[in-house]
Length: 87
Image (cartoon, rainbow, N blue to C red; front, side, top):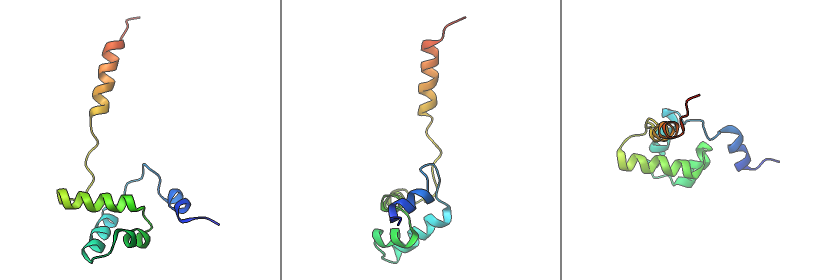
């Protein structure tokens, strides 16, 4: 028998992004005074994800994802410059 957490992990990997519809549904449920736990159970999404989407919506007023940070690219470029050796 599968538990709810196993089912969620199989359904939604870490790299998968939520659709705008799901994010909007979370906000709609929140505006209808549903608890984070109830929204999580209703949509079969982890509570931390629901909480994060609602918090981001309250602070920034948006539900869309932001473009990824370029910090990793800067670190990679700096490392290549430091360790560059001519052959």
